Length: 221
Image 1 (tube, rainbow, N blue to C red):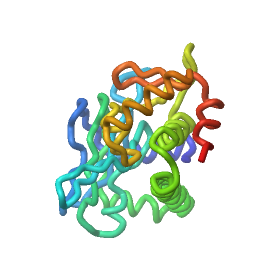
Image 2 (tube, helix red, strand yellow):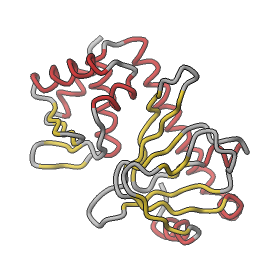
Image 3 (cartoon, rainbow, N blue to C red):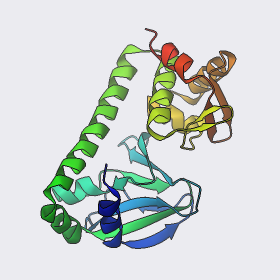
Image 4 (cartoon, helix red, strand yellow):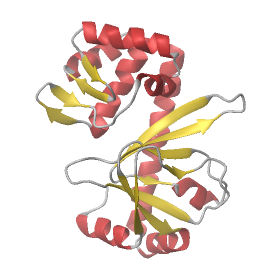
């Protein structure tokens, strides 16, 4: 959402730290809300990918979303002055630019138009969460999976020979946590999408082979 100059200025506020896959960038419940993180890829020609999860009281884990290169994480706790509400874990080699909260707020106050960009980002994430809740109430597991894959491909995907690479790496259990479905149901849904020529899945790599067909499938009631 920012122009090149604003992106450069924002990056200059932070100290980059390199993280490998599986590294916890932010931990749920942490009371230290003294920084935000701006994600960048650690390797040229690749993307950063991190997952946002929350643990429930019964021990279950919910995947709330994914974040990629250029995304900001940890801003809600800083803005509200509360404990961290979710855990952010790197899925690929990632550079996390750690920006102190006071520096971040001061930078926003000096450039009011950036508050608008931040508000738009938060609104988009709320819209995403609302869509997932509506999907859970209204659609079957295959349709929910098709809809979330379409959204991810539209936000983060890039063209490849087979179609559109999803742009984020997710396992079937993680897909299940994202759409509120058990792994067995997700396995069946993935097989159905493959059978219909809509999806290729190799490990954590997902390619949408027919984006229009996938959107049509996701429009079914």
